[in-house]
Every structure is written in structure tokens, then in C-alpha cells.
Length: 383
View 1 (cartoon, rainbow, N blue to C red):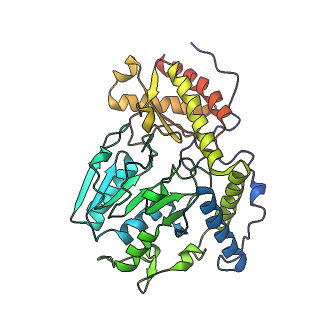
View 2: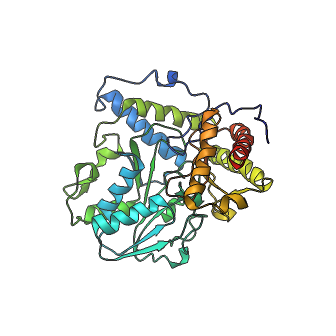
View 3: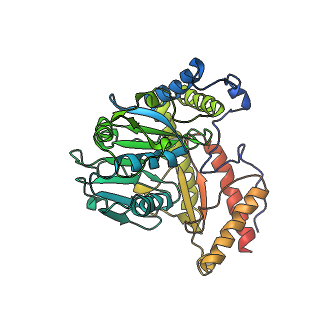
């Protein structure tokens, strides 16, 4: 039986959201927070606008796009897009993991649109992207946080599309190159790749999306927190820092700090490179470890942020589904108890296994230190 490894991760936080804070972070990074001040005050608006401006610059947002801060994390941003924009055309919904399936459910059961096609695939795979009809609106996730599967690029999206393309990019923005010229709405949250705090989302709108907003009136009542227009015109203040609801200025300050860190290490290319290096460390380990594999077998669609793993040993696969889930949970619990890896269990709806967040705030050295501990925990459960 393996003995406990001697090297421990310096930062054992591998959660897929909220994710690890940036290297070197401490609460001192929040010392300039304008606590007790209104977000409508000059300083509050300046901080909110700073998040918008720095985010747009790092991501390379094209001229003419609008970027705003919205309530309720990425979920709120996606729902805002669905409720505000869908209806004029049929819609193709793509789903290959739990969050994509949630958007399918909302469109079918809540909005009850009459013309919906659902293109689905199981965990670890993508649906047939060649079947997407871009004369229709299209909704998809760029990276499946709960399946570890990403689209390979944006080449499959038609440049001459007639409908809008709505992309949930919460675990890909800042870590993967986004094909902005093929997208119309992109959403994400702060607590993923840059390790910010929760509760806030961001929504980026192309000129085509703005035109839809200003020409389309949804057939259903619109809650205040979903409203992007007033009197048939875009509410421009949302995209200058006049948020719909009251934001946490502590969370805003934390995001400013994360964006400054991203700039200091080289911006988007450096963020992507750090995340890809994290995946390579896991790929090297999987290649020499016979009992584990990636949920996404195809490297071309394998995520380097949400790295999802499954146990392939005969003793494990022979177990019932419930017992596999219990065994995987025991491995994660042992790592938690040792203080070497927190929140490593696979998502509740995904196949039993482990999930390592490999986003840019995670140091490769910490992943390398974690992997022998996973081997140790596996041996304890196997025994």
C-alpha cells in the first residue's frame, strides 16, 4: 500500500466554482474597497466601469460590443439572454452536460417556445455540430464545466448566420480563445477563471444582439432584473456601470484585483497558457496511471479548466452506479480530510469520478503535488 506523499499542495483549493484565488491573494487586496458607499456614487460607478473596461480589454472584445454587469452570476446572465432575445425564430439548443440541459429545460418548460430542436450528447462527448441550423437562434455552452468537454473552436459556427448565437462561456472566458466574430451573446461569471467572488454575472452583446433587443418585444412578462431595454431602446447605463441591482462593492474590488493580476502576467495569452499547462500535467499523469482516464476521451474537445476524470479499474467499473459514486466520494473525502485537495468530487449529475479545476489561478505545481495524493487515496479505497 502506498505511503502518504511528503509534498503537499501549497494551495489545496481545486473547486470548479468559486475557484481558487489568484496566486498571492490575501484580504489586503480588498483594503481599498469603498465599503459603506453607494454603488451609485462616483467611486462606485468608477469601480464598476473599471471591471467592464479591463474585462473587455483582456478578452479582446470587438468594437461595437456592449459589456455589462448583471445579477445572479452566469445563471442570471444566461437567463437574461434567453428571456430577452428568444422568440422571433426557431431555436437550436445544444446540451452535453448539466448546465446546457438546464437551459434546454428553461426554454421548453418555462418559455414554452413552439419551435425548439434539442441536439444532445452524453457526458464526455459533443453533439453533431454539423447539424446545427444557423438560420435559427442557437444556444450552447463553450465549455461544459460538469463534463470537461469544450467545443474545439468556433469554426463550426456560420459566419453568415441569420439567427443569434448565445454562448454560455462561464468556464471558458479568460481561459480559451472566444470566436467573437461568430458569437452574438456571451455570458460568464467572476468566480471561475479569475477566481473572483460569486453573485455577479457579465453579459456581452454584439450589435446584432442589440438590434434584436430593440426590435423584439417578448411575449411574456419580464422581471426587472432581466430587462435590458426601456421604451424599445437599450438601457445603456447597464454597460457603463449602472447595475440593475445593488452589487457587492467588496466583490467588485476583488474582481478589479483579479483583472490587474491578469494584466500583470501577460493578459489573455498568459491566462490561457497557465490553464493549458495545468491540463498537460494531468495528461502526463493519466498516461502513466492505468486506472484512471479523462471523461472526455478526445483530446480535441477536452477542457483545460474543468478537468473531469473517471476511474477505469475493473473493480470500480464492476460496482453498481450507487457504489461507484460512494467510492469516488470516499476518495474525495480522504483528500479533503488530509487538507490536500478540496471539492474534488465530480458534479452530482455527472458520472462518478473526480474533477480538478485547472483554471489560470491554479498553480501547476499544486496540481503536480495533488496527483500522488489522489493515487494514495485511491489505494485506501481500493483496499
